[in-house]
Each structure stands twice: as C-alpha cells, then as structure tokens.
Image (cartoon, rainbow, N blue to C red; front, side, top):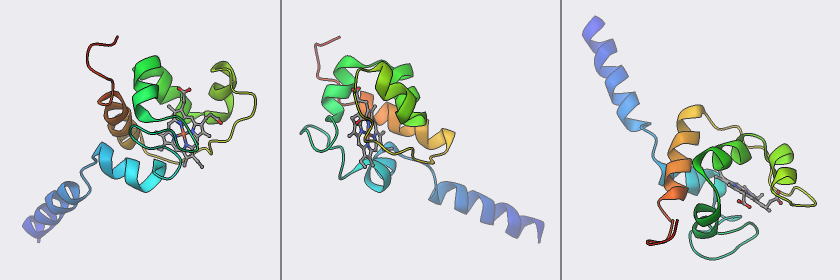
Length: 102
Ligand code: HEC
C-alpha cells in the first residue's frame, strides 16, 4: 500500500512537472507570442527590457504593475498561477532574450 502511494506520487509529480512552455500555452498564448507582438508585447520584447523580478511582479499583479510600467489602462488579467509555474514562465520568457543584448 505504501509503495503504491509512493509510486503514484512520483508519477503525478513527473506528469505535472512544470515547464514554461506548457504554462505559456495554457495561460499566455493568444495575448502574447514569442517573437511577434499580439495583444500584449512579445516575449522577446519583454525579455529585452525587463528583469526577472519585473516579470514576476507583472504576472502576479498586472493591475498594479502595469501602471508602474507606464501603461495607461491595464488589459492583462490576473492569472492564478502557482509559484512554481510563475518561476517556469519567467525563465521561459527570459529565454527569448536576443543574444548579444543586455
Ligand atoms: C487577456 C490577455 C493576456 C493574457 C492572457 C496575458 N497577458 Fe500579459 N499582457 C497583456 C497586455 C494587454 C499587456 C500590456 C500591459 C497591460 O495592458 O496591462 C501585457 C503585459 C505583460 C507583461 C509586461 C510587459 C512589459 O511592458 O514588460 C508581462 C511580463 C506579461 N504580460 C506576461 C504575461 C504572462 C507570463 C502571461 C501568462 C502567464 C500573460 N502575460 C497573459 C495581455 C495578456
């Protein structure tokens, strides 16, 4: 019984192992694309101008942070994503930073 439980746990953890691309496809795609501007800016653009902390802050509190970023009206909804998914998506966005740019 105990082993079954352990195997079950390992299985589910592996299955739901978070991955930035999955988070992107389920929560952000449609409004953001990797390299083209959609409803929101592209990940390439975001990665070029924002830091890791700024991206995390924006996704956690779009209403408050969009004002700090200079947007007049906030159009990005607050998404209920776990801390783990937030880390995964932040790293995913940063992976689009064009090479050679700081
Ligand atoms: C319903 C559309 C929508 C969805 C879904 C959405 N966004 Fe946005 N996002 C926007 C818009 C529009 C902006 C521009 C700022 C604003 O209007 O508030 C934006 C802005 C941002 C910014 C800041 C851009 C800057 O100037 O640096 C980040 C970072 C961001 N989004 C990340 C995400 C991530 C990550 C997800 C998925 C977890 C996501 N967004 C889902 C529409 C969306």
